[in-house]
Amino acid sequence: MKALSCLIVSFLMITAASAVTVEQLKDMFSRGEYASVVREADQTLIADQNLTRSQAYQMIMLKAESLLRLGNRAIAAQEFGAAADIAPTLEQLAWARSTRVLLDRSSGVTYTPRLAQEQQPIDIIETDSRRRAMAALLADLRPSVQRMYDNALEAETLTELEDAVIPVSDAALLEVASTGKTSEMMPMLNELGKHAQNLIDQELARIQRQITHVGRLAAAYDDFGIGGRRGTSSRDRDLLFDMQAYLDRIIERVQMYRNAAIRLGGDTEKWDRILLQIIGLQ
Image 1 (cartoon, rainbow, N blue to C red):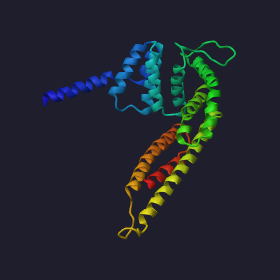
Image 2: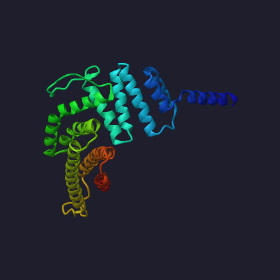
Image 3: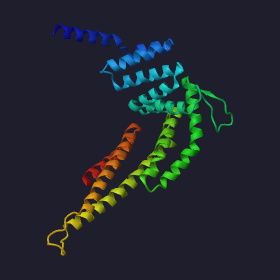
Image 4: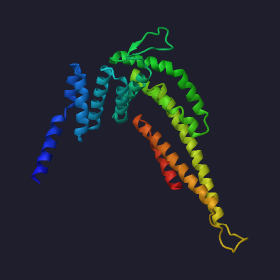
């Protein structure tokens, strides 16, 4: 018992010693102690279970920025992605995700615009130049994003539409990160959401008709056998199981769109209604 108590005390002492604050990490970062920031952020993120979402986001971002300055672009990109997953605000989400997208399309620590008149490399390390690089990337992506958006609005299936969701959402976040505005790309993303809702409504109406049809067949009287109601055949049961699995896949998509709406400051009321409708069908 005494040995266990000593072990617990030792663990608590190590945990307390390994935890640092966001302000301490910022001080290390400002002094250029990037390797220390990475090490201390890692230890604190593991040891301190009481970190708020904002604190965890800031620590991961400081770790990511430090890795970028140490030349480890691949791991830095992963950390920016991890920070985006827990970002408390739209602005923080936009900055973390847009940095990840920018890194994926950069060479070294610069981004070279493709469509600008002056195709000079833009530094992606410092905040101001990174913001300019994000604006240049958005300009480069805009034609292809517009084509995907136009095609998505003509899509007749969710699979066809979803090809455009990530590119359009990334463009919307690049707009927020580079300009602070949501005037151009966010309305496009909202329209994709509305079209997805319409397609899902059509699918749910079709499934409701199939369920109703199977129910009518099962309730019908069988005049050619021993009498009584027909019941469900093996084919009917296979159809119902297939519909159940399909509804599960639709739920996954609805939850994805709903989570995106929450993170981007959109309305979830329609998605909530669709989820309830699917549960009712199941």
